[in-house]
Length: 401
Image 1 (cartoon, rainbow, N blue to C red):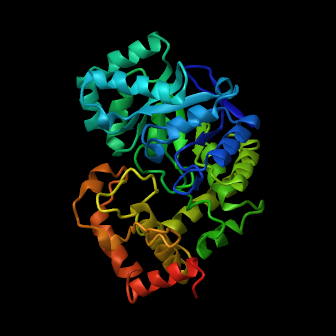
Image 2: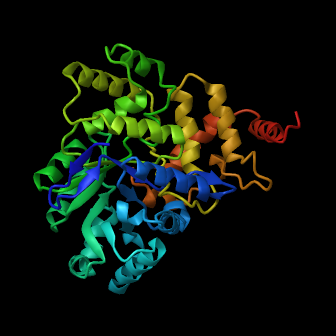
């Protein structure tokens, strides 16, 4: 495992962090035994940064992490979680959430505490409620070691937030498709110029950049490289190639993914890609951008939907119709997942259930007009005898065919 030093703090952090937003599931809940083994196994192999948040797994992630880090594992890691700023209504709420998070995580301190999902409007509201005094206080009393923020807003809102407080670090979305999205490369450089540590989320863009079955045009670009790498390795190495990057967060929920990510994290030095390899990444970016229809990263901030639409699932398979050359697979998987084919009492999540309430639009970090895009999903993914397709996959799941 390689490590990089956070500029202001001197902390030596593993370049691969364990994200606890997409843990393995079983019977609709976190698969505690498997997830604990995965997390502890990664720590045993050198991962020392663990990231969670108040809303992950609808509130179940923080308590899980608290239990998983028992037996001496808490002392081996830098633990990160986030203040849910959108839920803070009064200054007292800041204290309430932090103290509850300490209880959930079964710890007396949080190493890296982020103001979660900031844009300027949210940050302005927090400033008016005295957030800077709160951050000063929790660092002084030892409940929090480092303070930072995660950013999910327009590029021009990033610098004013950085400049408004002496943050130790920030967390931004960054990958070879999202160079100019949200904070982007410009934000990465600016934060680094302020001596801030930088944590990266969505390095694989919700997994789409790491799929073994890449679009033919993208794979053809990768195939021209002298050194052969998997799509995951190309994507992660591109991010780690930037010396400003401290930690990449990966939501690892498959053992094989953990193994691969840790292998790459033991080799990916900054500035190690050649000019030819960087040109390959530029070409791959161009081919991908020709195919993506909806800019969804499956972050799930839009959930829960009031009428149960499985919004990220809808967009995932809709995009796959255009990205990958297997429409039948995309239609089948859309019917399976939105129709909950394997559930005894399915709670369907079809795009056609959308009632255009707009609640999701306000929550979406990517600024997607979700209701409008869901209407397009309906046209493509629910065309023809869709209900018959759903009935068929349910019968298949019950071995009735």
